[in-house]
Every structure is written in C-alpha cells, then in structure tokens.
Length: 414
Image (cartoon, rainbow, N blue to C red):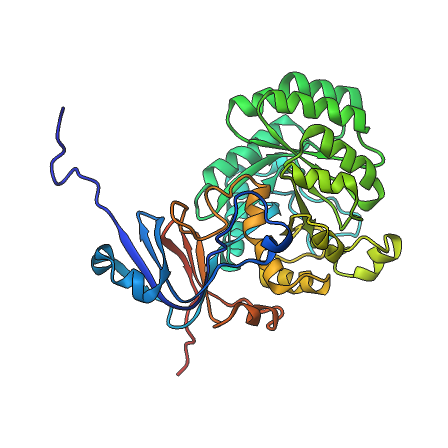
C-alpha cells in the first residue's frame, strides 16, 4: 500500500457561516412535505452552518457551532443578521430553445430553429440563461427538451446540459419528446430507439409526457410510459385542467413522480397520487397569474384547497421564451400567496418539494448534515420580508456546494 505524501493528501476545506438572524433549515420528514409539514421551516434564530468540502456537517445556533474545534480553523462567512436559507429550485426551466424572431421581424416570422444554430451559439445562450437563474437564487433546475424537433436536436440539448452541469447550475435533464410526427411513428421511435438511446448515453433520467387534445391518447402515453419505466426512467406528466381526470388516471397508472398542471380539485385520485410520493408542480405562468380565469372554470380548484387536502405542491416558473413569465423566485412566492398559500408553505414549495419533484431531495432543498451546501444569503432579516418586496431580488450571496457562485456588487458612487 502506497501512503500519499503530504503534497498528495487532499486538503480539507472548512467553512463557517455564522450570525444569521434567521436560518431556515427546512429540517423535517423525508419525502414530499404535505399537511402541517408543508409549513415547517426549521427556523433557527442566530443560526450557523459548518461545511466540510462543500457538504454540511453541523447546523445550529452560532454559539454552539462556533465553539466546535473545526470552526476555529474554518474560513468564515458573516451573515451579519441576514436571512440564510436553502437555494431555490425551478423544476420547469428551459435553457435551450429556438431563438425568437427579432423585434423588427414580421409578425408571422418563425424563430430560428435549433438545428441551424452553431454549437457555440447554443452554449452561449444556455450559459446566459443559467447565469440569470443563479442571480435570482436558483441553483438547481429541471430543464426539458420540449423544443427539440427530433432525436438529433434532443441529443444536442442534453449534451449541452452535461457541458453546463455545475457551471454553476445543477441541472436535472428531462427528456420531453414534442416532435411533429404521426402518433404511431412517434410511439415506435420512442419505444424502440429514442428512449433507449438517451438512457444508454446517460443523458436524462426523467421523461415528461404531454397530455393534450390533439396529441397522443392516454392509452398511447401509457404505452410510452411503460417502455420508459422499464428502462429505468422516472415519469412525469404535463397537462391542463381540461384533461385533469385523464391526467390523474394516467399519473396513477404510471406512478408519476410529478405532474405539471394548474390547480386541480381535490379528489381521491389526487390524494392517492400524493400517497405515492408524487408532487403537483404549479407552473406559475401567465394563465395562473389571474386566478379569476381559472376559478371561473373550476370553482373548487384552488391551491389552498389542495394544501388543505394534504397534497404536496411545488412551484415552478413555467419559463417560456414566447410567453409572459419570470425567472424571479421572489415574485413567484408573491404569486403563490395570491393563490392562498401561506409564506412558509410557499418557501417549502419553492425549495424542498421542488427538489423532491426532481428526485434531488437527498442532495439539496434543505440545509441538513450530509447534504450539499446550496444556500442563499438574502438582504432581509426575516423570510416574511421576501413577500413584502414584490419584484425585488434580495439575493446577496449564492453558495453552491460550499463555493460562492454569485455575490451582489455594492453601490458605486462618487
């Protein structure tokens, strides 16, 4: 056995984050939070964290953590009375998409197709989007391939995700086939070639299936879902309230890890899906920004009704380059309260439950020993202040795996 020399021995890096006026750990039971657990933030007054090589080792009050032996040789980050909490996650993001037509283009001008964009342009566009999310405090995303036209486009997008991994985002790639093809040809391609090809290349672990009036029927989607789960994929479903019953039935039949849809009326199917550990992801897109539009069609279908029924909910931006959406999680938190969520429930939905929907809760989503140190320092003393500052971005410092990846610049004035 060869003993490494001191020069070859990996050097440990210890970091102490101290004096957080409010430290939100989100410590709690495993699995998606529901019921009373949906509002438990695990808040610690005057809190501190001790990190070792980017992994959380100790969580507690500043007085206790500062007195540990390892804290004496740790690099310090002083929160100085600010809020420290887990980083946000966005389970419904788009990093690569066709470039929209210019402002001076005709109204019917088509966007630039992905297949004609050079690799460096794709990478530059995705890198810019990743930086925007990080500035807003989002350090993990679920990014789908819905804009791909064929397998070639899909592989290009997924390989770009791999190249961008940890620069500085954590990306959970989602294979979302949306090709223009006959139903039978699409099913044959998916089940015999595409799913297997993507899985063998280790490019994605989640498949997203879309239920829409002019798309594949529930029976056809179930056929694709069976093929996907046989290959080891997790499945999530996307639909609208118009297909809610078929969406719930299909989600139960496939054991979906998550479903993306506007608020649905609480029912036995939705509760059974929650019992399986599935998370309802609410894409807070333009249609959901006006509750009156949805509530007129589904009077009993509200976020508050789902939470009271014990349904685990996650928040997503539903970012669409062609729609009216936002990347700012602080604004999404405000929108969530407009739909009846309490501030604590909205924070759980934007962090831990969002991580569960992407199967990342063992890595991130809460600040607990053994997990990656993905956290934010915000320029407010209390988490409730985030909901009073609509449209603001109060992220002062973003830390991913123990390494600062964003720091807001100070005011420069003569």
